[in-house]
Image (cartoon, one colour):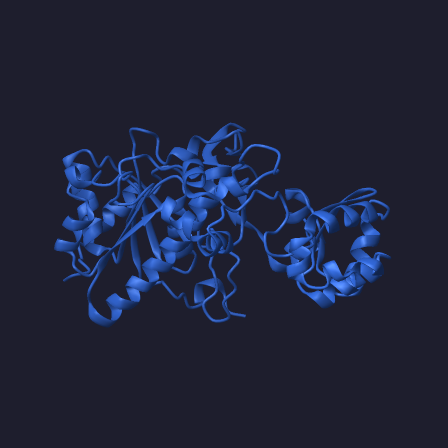
Length: 404
């Protein structure tokens, strides 16, 4: 096996100027960094850097036991980056960023629309100076539209984009997804857009601007519920753990806990009914097809719930797995991350980190497993401004432009 330093990287020749903070933009740049791109993260010295550095309560501890500026939140999206402390509101700071932009293949930012115009760092200015650059702007509602000037946070995107109306108990209030999924998915769309634009740049030499919004991205991943509405004209209902298009598909109570059951086709349903001792349901004309089960879900589901309460959780899991009916546990985060599956797949990684207790931080791995250009964990999430001097020195000694 080749050492990490000898393993080829798919994006090792790319230079990314990262003017983003919080989660969507940093998610995108972390993904690029995982595959070798050089990421220069510009952080504001007036605010102490990326806002999420202070989003505790969980922090990596300094060697003396005090909290560091590496919050768990910040570490989730900022490995494989260099941090420089630069105030872009000053002429000196703008000059530094402009020098870095001259080297950049990619610039990514998540300021409000036109928020960088006064600093001369906006997409129109940068593309005029550097026509080969890929410039990605992430905002709450996009660069145009009636809400362009509204601030964008994950919670607001989930609310405006419709997913909160689908999430949570049907009898309870609309509920956000438990993590910042609108931000994360937006970051993934940003990565796809950037790589697509780079493909075009590599063929033509032409860069371009990517306009991406949290709300646009969130509406795009309404997927089948979005097209359910577009097809029927009827607003989707909040169903908790149930599925609008598959029955039975839900969390079910057993005598000692809950299990997840997802019966994806009619043969599975027949096996499911047999194994739980309800062959009568399998032969009932009302439940013979998934379409009929959806129509009669209010009759079918209560009977299934009553039956499964008489089984132990382990028995349900074993019996359904034995006949290849999709079934699974509902694990806590500790159970998931400490499972044998997570261990086998390398889901948790330990990254050496100077100045913290135990000399390393624990992070979630990138799930992509490429056979020739695998993910490389070259560096831990950076301390605020730790690379400022080194990066500025490269500007003094190697003032080379991508466009030269």
